[in-house]
Length: 185
Image 1 (cartoon, rainbow, N blue to C red):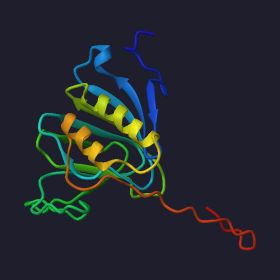
Image 2: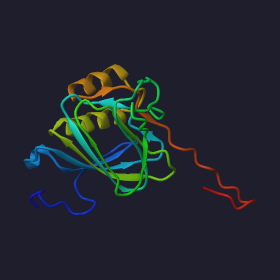
Image 3: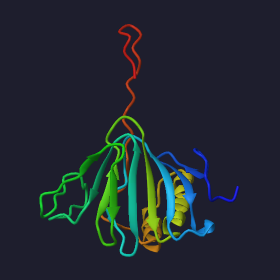
Image 4: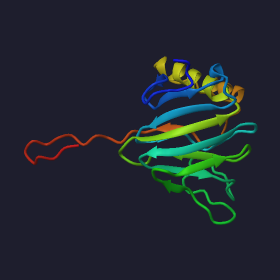
């Protein structure tokens, strides 16, 4: 295959404990934008961040994500979940078919606050910023042990990512099965 037609489930895949990213169109294919299919597990929060040069497009394929794309009246450093715009906008609970466009300079975030994985189509212009970003963050997570937060911050700066609130991955705890009551996860 030439890479111009990518069958379902195909493409170069990067899998970490916090995300699964499948590359669909990249600079190597001659594309000026990068296209990825991303599985967002329960408990994943990318954290609010901003790009000065990049623009992004998010399309929810399956599941539900909380989405945010605006400059809040007041930025907080810990969480973005209760941010509000000057017009009264707040984060949106986005179901299948929802779309978010993020122009350069716009704070934005997404998280999966449900107990089921979500899947989205994610595009970034220009390529290859996010291609390299996903490759490096996967290497950092795969290394095991404590994450070198200074190294992550240097990497983000290289790829036009200014983090405002922390990236988090807090998967929901599984409910153990209780044979006597028949309960379970």
